[in-house]
Structures are given as structure tokens and as C-alpha cells.
Length: 175
Image (cartoon, rainbow, N blue to C red):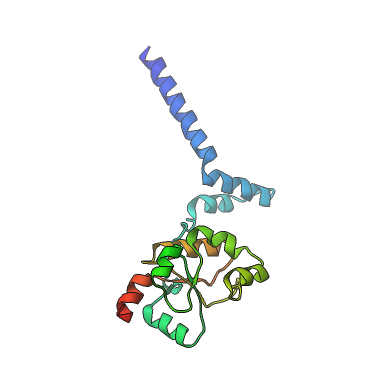
């Protein structure tokens, strides 16, 4: 009887594991790979499982971070498209000069607008996917890191964020 129950338990665990695998992202990647190539190589399937994909909002590479002094320079040179992804009430309470408020919850749909509609809505030129002067900021860097992930998913490959956020700005500016 015990061996029958143990086998049933193992079978259930196996079925559960396989079901979990089917629903996992890895399986979807394999299906996409198979669809892309009629006969995937062993290496391509192996890469699918061993290559890590970036996490949403992951900003581990330092090239995507703008420091306070870099931000000051960009602002003084008027070479920046600065987007404040905080909520409107936070923005109204104080913001970095020339920052355009696009709350994080509206960012994806806003970046998908046509250039004309973007300009009508925000009264600034729409950012281009190859622009290297797009900078997001929030209060302390968490929401701007998420904004970075959203923008990159939409093809804005050179976007950056001011990790110190408005908190650091206000402190440095003595506000």
C-alpha cells in the first residue's frame, strides 16, 4: 500500500513539475525559438535556459544612471528631456526645473503616443527612441528605475534615470 501511495505522490509531483514548466517563461522561450527556426540547435535551446533575462526595472549598469552633477550640467546646457514619474500631487509640491510630469502609471501609454499627440498633451517635443538625453526621475530612484524598464521595453535603448531623485535634488539645492 505504501509503495502505491508513494508512486502516486511521485507521479503527482512529476505532473505538477511538468505543468509548472509548461507555464514558465522558459517554455515560452523554447516555443518561440522553435517557431523562429524549424530545427533549433542544442546550443540555442541551452542558451534559452541559461541566459538570464533583465528584470523589469533592473538598472545595474551604471551607464543608465545620471548623477546630480551630470543632471545639473545637462539642465544648464538645455540638453535633456527630463520626465518626473511621480504622482501629480508630488510634482506640484516641488519639482526639478524643466521636468515634465508623466506619472509612472501613465508612462507606457504616453510613450506610445504619436509625436504630435505627445506634444499636444505634454507641450514638449516627443522623445525619440534613439535620443540619448532622456532622463527619468522620481522621489528616490525606485519608480524611475521602473520607468527605465518600461521605456526600454518600448525600444528607448539609451534612456537613463536620476537615481538620487527629487529627494537628493532638494537636499543639494537647499530646498
